Image 1 (cartoon, one colour):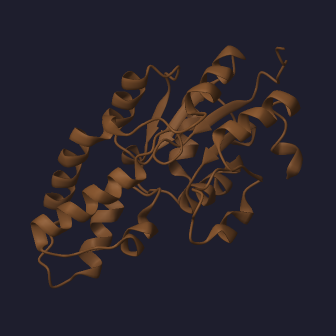
Image 2 (cartoon, rainbow, N blue to C red):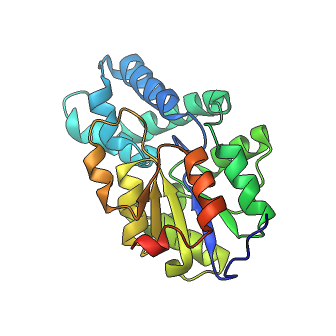
Image 3 (cartoon, rainbow, N blue to C red):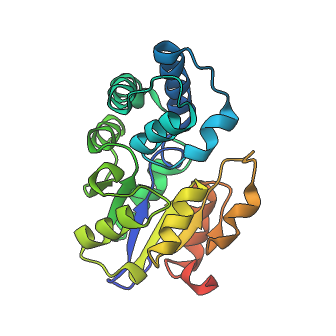
Length: 229
């Protein structure tokens, strides 16, 4: 059954960890490059604070933390992007990702991806999985990464939508904070064993998966998370 929605609504999705299972790939690449270039061993707890943030933010964070390691931010950034460029399309789609995007596309709802990843990573993933998304915004295009709202604000501009009429799906705490700071409705879809699930309480709604989110949308319609504000 087809739903009728307000034409001024838009759906915005993060990519890493939400649409594709790339967070483990990113963490592996980050740990590998730090070990290879500087002999530094990182564990998951060192990497989690950068989930949802830009690659540059990670590199700056490492340089600030390991001041005696001789980290050159530009070298670390280039090395990490080169490595991830070879790995990003190996990340599998997460359950419900393809279905929810096609469902929104069928409803003629404006759709976009707003990710901290570089644009060519987003484009490569969309092409690899034949996803029905044609509007992209990257954290590399703005001056501040998530949790700053800039990437979502730019995305709304490209969609020609007021921010308060946009709804965001995010898997990271930084992304949820960014969406709320942009005055958008936010649906949190955190990983199953997230170490601090209570931090997602600021989201307008929380789902265990995109599949669950889609099932709710099919029943309640696009107004669902906004009605919970």
